Structure formats: C-alpha cells, structure tokens
Image 1 (cartoon, rainbow, N blue to C red):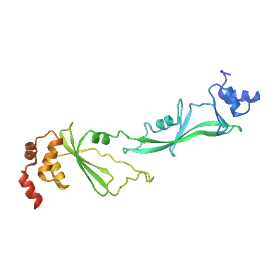
Image 2 (tube, rainbow, N blue to C red):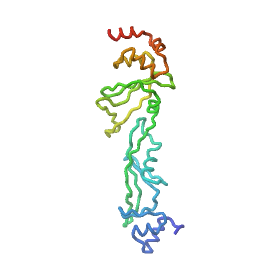
Image 3 (cartoon, rainbow, N blue to C red):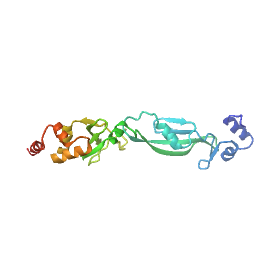
Image 4 (cartoon, helix red, strand yellow):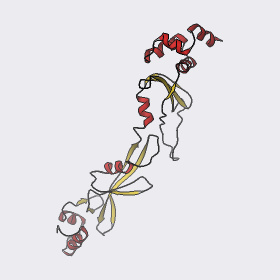
Amino acid sequence: MTSLTVANAVESLLNEGVTTPSEIADAIEGAEYDGVENAVILDPNRWYADDGNCELAYEDCDSGYEAAERYVDGGDWGELEHDVSVTAWRIGLDADGCEVKCDEETHSITVNAGAPGLKAQQACKPIDNHEGKYTTEYLAWDDEASSFVKWTNNGGTRGAHDRMDSDGKWRERYDMPEEISENEAFAWLCKYGYEPESAIERLAEVSDMREDDLIEAIGTTLEEAEEERDS
C-alpha cells in the first residue's frame, strides 16, 4: 500500500470491498474521516483559501487559520491597515466519490498592521489632539528627528469612514508624521484653545527644548502672542 499513489490506493481498497469514506480513512495511513460531510480527507495538510477573488492551495498547513495567513502574506493589499476575510477549507471525497469541502471556516486577517505611518506615529510623544467632524489632528514631538510633527487620521465626531472596495468596512489611515516648525506647533496649540504661556509650557514639557529657546525660535514674546490672539 505504501508504494501506491493515493488514487491507486483508493481504487485498490474499493476492489477489496472497502467502500465507505470512514473505512477508507481507516485503511489509508494519514487520511482523516469527516463525519459531518461523510467524506475521507486524503491529504489532511492540504488546505485551500479564497477571499472571493482567487482560490489558492497550500501544502503542509496545520490549520485553516495558517492557510488564511499564508493567503494574505506577501499579497498586494495597498498601504492602509484593514481586515481581509479569507475562507479556508480542505477537500474530501464523499460516498459517491465526489469532492466536497470539509472543515470550511472563515478568518479575518489584518493586513498592514505594521504600516510605516502607524509605527512612526507610535514612536512620537503626543502633545495634544483635536477632533474635528471627519478627522482628528495630532500634534507630537519626534525624538529621532528632534522636531515637532503633526498628522491627521480619519475619524472625528461624525465617525467618517474611508470606504474601500465598496464593502463599507472601516479603513484606518496612518499618515506619516509631518515635521513642522516651533512656530507652527505653537500656533497649532493656540488655535485650539491654549493660552500662549500654557502652549509654551506644554511644548517644552514634551520636547527637549527650554522655554526660552522656544520663545526665541517662535520669534515672539508671550506678550506679543497674547496681543495677537486678542486682536
């Protein structure tokens, strides 16, 4: 039996009167019986996967989840972080000798979870954020660049969605932080309600800059900033 191909082995068993899927599974080493489909799975480690666009087969898989992960691994899924729904299954032969899907399961696999923009944002020290209708703006300090940075993520008070592929699913957006000047960071905080003195204190607290150096870089005194704000 070991020198025969699987197909020849099944044919030989049928000639010997071993006819049911469960009997065939017992007779062939490594085969499995699926009681739900009443089918024999001749190659238990061969899984199939499909996201609705393309069906692929994978050898030496320990699970449907592994097949789903291998399906999305290395694929071109764009730059945004999102979930891909992948259905995985194995193939068995039923009592009529027809192929049937066995152990079918669906997994949600996150792609681009380590998107460059997300990693860059997480590496920054947050200063403050402002939630608008459709987006949320962030101000932060980037230690590596020794600079203030800002970025905008989708979201906001009205929960705006980036709808990709017309499936209506949430698509998070992770823009790369943009370096800005001390003056722009100061103006950002004042724009969203900070008193000039409080803005300087907050910028100095998070960054590696002294308050006096910040004021010099901004090119204004606190008195001038207050006068400009009140004008």
